Length: 286
Image (spheres, rainbow, N blue to C red):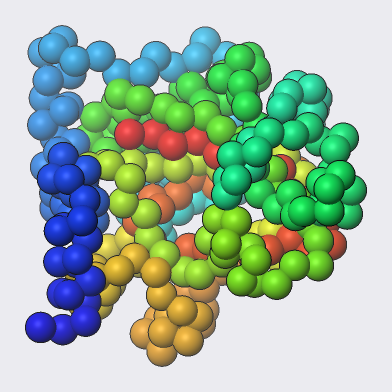
């Protein structure tokens, strides 16, 4: 038995079946398509609701058809935009809210962090802002009519759920191993969070390669070696470099307000922020 098969078998043996099935099946594009068409069928006869688009459009970008085409061909569309006043509204609201660290579940506030560390000297690193669902501008962005229309076409159904999060990553002189310990995904991986899922991300701070940029490999939502598709989701930079052309690897950098819609079953990762904190609105549709 190959290493990839052993890894998959180990996961199946140690996780309950109900939790296994999305992880096992959601990685296959055919399964995702069949699931989407089934849910879409229920929606067309009124048996299952989808999320309701907002009345106001806060996301600037191309028509939904162009977003769908980019998702189909490139795994993502990069170039959505939030107006400065929208970013300001979300950031101002976030800075008044508590945060919860990923690794320790410890709660703290933005003003507690100095040079990437909490008052006791421990790393702050990465945390969720709590209560983002209560920020009107964030909810309106998440229910963008443009995005909902594109996803309804791409996923074959209107998403039935949406998770709205803001992720705070604090810059500091930390090793890669420390970042990994605290939950940051520094290694290439693909997501399998449900039977179907798409993400929209919007930078709420200026982002470059030294301040937490997202990196992705275009087209890999449907182009993976079979052992990789069946095995573990994580791959090293060296492995990715051997299999995929370097021109397909893109570092997504840009000003606050830049957004990208992504089928995150493609390979992607995050670069650790070294020079500046990163704040990102992170929306999952399923």
